[in-house]
Image (tube, rainbow, N blue to C red; front, side):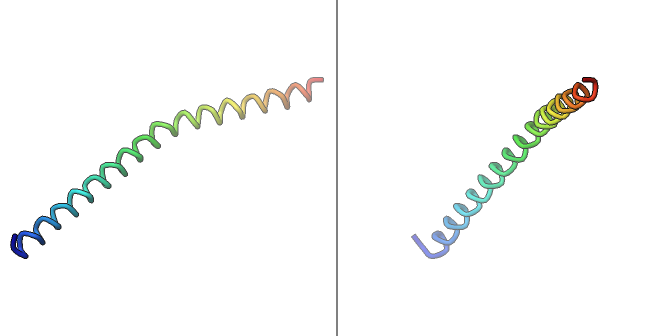
Length: 60
């Protein structure tokens, strides 16, 4: 195997690794995006529960 072939093979390996990392980053971003609304809903629920408790304290 010549030097040119070795460099070309190494370059292809590095490109493949870069594509894999980019794909993983894209998947993580998508997962975070899909989790965010759920967190917002949970935060809203918790906020409402605390508000209800506070209102109950004032009613008593």
